[in-house]
Image 1 (cartoon, rainbow, N blue to C red):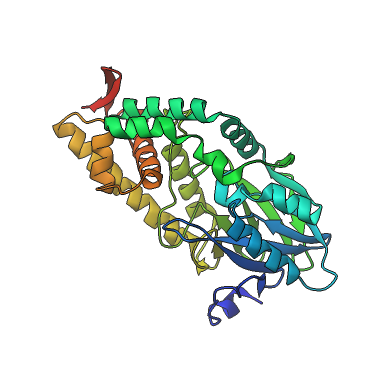
Image 2: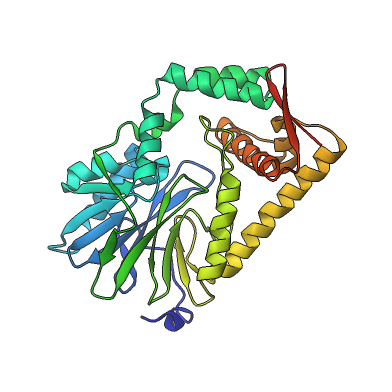
Length: 341
């Protein structure tokens, strides 16, 4: 199936509890999530060695039930050759141990994503809670939020529980199929080194979480590395997309629906972040602010701990970029970070 044919073919959501073939060697399934973004897309590529599954969903009973049904609905005599993890977030890596053992397959992922997963999952509840509460205090959050973070425990580990042995891959990794060759790229932004897959000849791009069609992916600092200019690296990625893709490419994301023209989407996301940066910069020119005040400007009222974590860490990423570009200054007052003109 050529891309021009796809423009006339309305891609529908995959059938429940099975991989649905959507283009040549590419299959799509969808797993539920207990968040506002209520699903994650997982993929499979039929290689010359067998089926390569990409991503797993969370480690919970509902996801296991879905996978058991998906596996039962595999084509007869299908061989699953390996499991590939795009990045370390729980909705992508969470059920990797379960699947690797059930299907007796090896697991592969970018080296930096493996290191990040291991680093966080090995923190005790006390260690993680102390680290998070210290940062929340530094960011200027209310005392209640600081104390809640301290007792919340390691919620990352709670969504994964444990991981299998995962072999690191580099840019030499590829997947060969009857229809073409899927190469890999590694980018920084939504995660330290997310893997993407692409077929340059057929102009197909599996972007996973880096180029979502409707919402901006969360671009957050790591709580253990909160001064990293992660947003600057993500904008570099978007510029790279603008320079290396065109409107004929079809994009298969980790959430929501496939779409055409990644260049248009990358430009829109750059504008989105530039508008947020401009809002913060103009506010700081008038009055010094802390991270919490900046978060209120960008996100308004936050209703739960899950959203608070991502909002405050993404706000810090925006402030880091302004600081990195020497647009603003930073100082510490009473163990709290303040940004000023």
